[in-house]
Image (cartoon, rainbow, N blue to C red; front, side, top):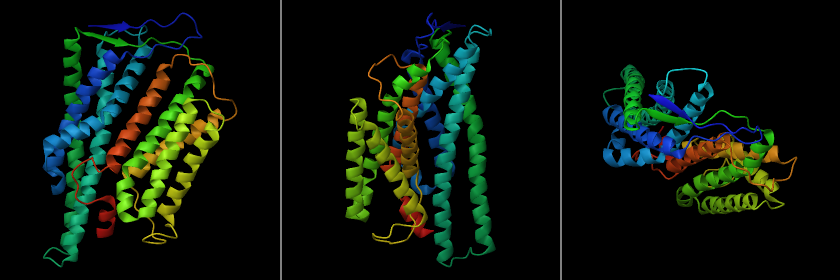
Length: 361
């Protein structure tokens, strides 16, 4: 087995060539669906009952939505492997093991999130059973709580080993199909100017990602309160407009990006701590969900990028984006897909929503 290293440019002013998509995408697709299969299987074994229906559809849907996460994992692993190329021997084994290890970390993060969600629903069910005055109350109910938590802990422990073994097998199987060759990017210098030149693209991607997450929760908010749904429609359109201004290098692009990042963040913080002073439930703090956490992460990223670009005008030139900027865009896409999937109620088949679970608890 050998590693094909893409030669680094001779001039320091040129960016390092990124990992080719012909290497990244096959590994990411296979690993996403392998990890998704095992998480779906563990959900069927120890998850809440309402999340175990239609396992094939759940596996296909969730794995597809999480594909950007594994694209990011493969990019990160091969970028780490490229740093040692030329200084260490070992052929393609070291990069392949790095890909398997980083993919296992990504799969474990997915497994943890899935287990926490299942545990949350299971505890809601136990609370409901206790409130109905059944045979199991008091100490009996406490034992049920402990047993349920330990069941999920054991599932995560066993699942992590299964994911690691499966990822190693999948990676080396793909490596064998490729003739034992694995292309990684060359190691080269990237100047500060080149990094800054690609930041507007990442900023626009973050704004569009936040808009997608906010658009996904519009139907839910329209059902709860029409004014809230209207606010998210306006916010979505404003974020899309800000992204378009950033791409076109308009004068008011950065101030608008700052406004649509800071405003929603402050409103979210207020609604989750003190509660809004108006609406169906005034001064009642709202529950924190995965969709709003993803939106907050994107808004924090766009805020930081807008502030970083504020001292200087948006660059007019469009040099090739370095590998680090491509990874940043993929990271934004990853958070967007997770937040969109959660906001649109696509992850799992839970009959209890975030608001419903908090009310039942």
